[in-house]
Image (tube, rainbow, N blue to C red):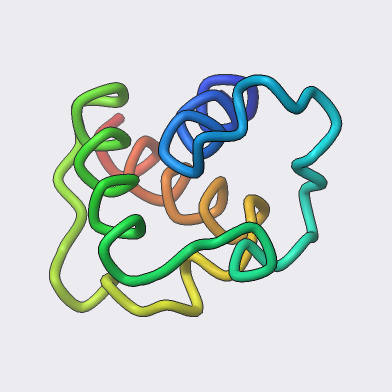
Length: 81
């Protein structure tokens, strides 16, 4: 799951050519994350993991870093089991 999320984040932040630019705890805002890119990440995550992220989870704290995004996706995957 983590590698799939890392791939999505790197694609949306256009970091595919920079192999070591995404640490799990690194604030994504330092890599260019804004609200528009966060929405693009949500759409990609929903498609990749077949989940629907609730509006109340559209909080930028959930998208602060890759670790928070992984926790958010895990919550939805475990809720669907």
